[in-house]
Image (cartoon, rainbow, N blue to C red; front, side, top):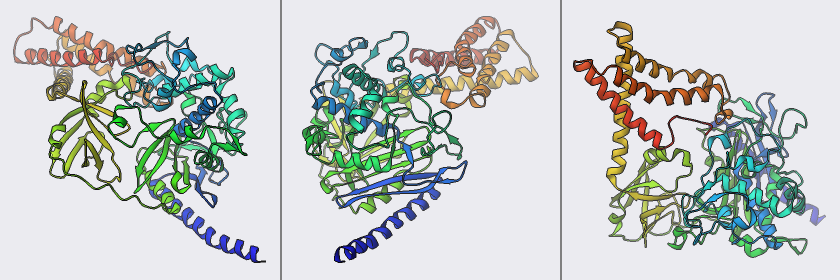
Length: 594
């Protein structure tokens, strides 16, 4: 009887808390315009799962705690842990060169003699590899069993390293796709089959699979919640070229089991499954230049130290078409949470959902590190560009829009950037700074043989001469002014005259730039953006013809005199210089599938 009363008392104190979380989550989903969510809360006392919103906006079906979901890049945490199982078995070593495991994969590594690409670098995103190209992510070509090698490179091209391996963090889906190939090379099986059988099953994750699962067609899973876009439209799961980096179907309860294991001693039923020292290393980066300079946040073996909402945990976020997810572990307290939202929105605040679960866990807040006087902070002023940047295909654009201006102000350093809100950094000493809304060091500034750089744990930036940055924008400005002039004066002449052969060539080429729009916007799904479709081929053709048309205009109208013809020539030259820059950067012709 006493045991029953204790159970009822525990139930009475637990259920209202669960109901309160569900109520808060439902309100947050409505406020953020999101469809539905499932989550799990892990504490030393046990696991609580919950759900709110809709599993399918098309049918109005409510989300249930046992619905299966997808989680995008949180897959990397699971895959990395599976690789650590192979390391524990002795089939792999973290410091093993990739060339020894995948000798047929061509790697262009200029630093191979001193910095070979190792397994650890793929797990830590410190390989120097590009993240992915549009064709690897936005394509309708892959099927569920497309060989992984087809998603790595095309036409036998080597994978190019842009920085010495191990030195700087640069997120790479390509790197984790290579890890899927590593599993296949070592086990002799498809990575999905081996991981499902030899890794997920022993963990008791029977609702989870690395295999392809979707909501429609033959073999559809009625328990898999439907994905959604901003407008509430539905999107079923589709196959990916880079599937080891983001294809995983699971449930909230299964992710709670994984979280409990990751915070444990690596044993299953008293038998070692993964070496405990490997588990303790996850999320704790020590090898990069930023880590050696004292930055505590970083990525290692599939997890990243994350300082948010006044607490510090080991986390991984993820998004895939139709879903956003987050897994966070707080090992010191034996607590964790997982959430998957079946809506991929560009405007919603997903951290607001994380905050609800963090409050529900009653985690002790971290006292922010005190600031320290830093009279030398002005030495870090300057203009910094991402190096290496995440998407090599758009390195030129990142050099313009992702560049950070660092200015010394009375309280510390002010970081301004076109892509993010301004950030205030408070000095901690020795080149370390804490972002104003964080509790531990979030940035480190360094000076070495390569010059001055800084890292925020998720991206490295190199200081560049100011003239180079402003010259780049001057080139863009001149090019846009030239294009604007040629378009306006061309339309004016087209309507009112007088016309010239060269002018007709240039205005025709400019108007042709609009031809791909209907095909790209209305004629195809954005999920095929990286494929060679009618729209993308047209885009490549018209952007490739534009400089040829402008050169032809200069030649055909070379004998025209007067102010307007000279302004036309100046505009053509201004446009051509920018098009030349774009061509050198690999953005002209603009070939989405390349």
